[in-house]
Image (cartoon, rainbow, N blue to C red):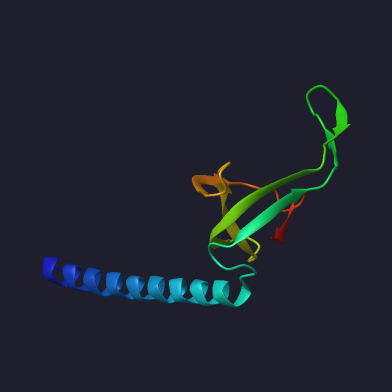
Length: 114
């Protein structure tokens, strides 16, 4: 194999890889569109009900209080389990969209429409 053959094979392989990446991106987009619960830009309430927690270091336990906060849906991601999870942005005190992401635990929190 000389340099010309190498460059030709490399170019063909990179074109195949790029085509597969584009197909995968389209597949993800269609999956998210068909399984999205909320519109992008929609205001939602993140509710964390009271639940027990255990501290591993000190052996302490307690109960968290009920918390509610508002956020905006900024997009969606696909988790490792294949679930569609909204990406949230925090809400400022004046009710406008913040640049900071709002992280929440799906196991202990849930979202509600407002």
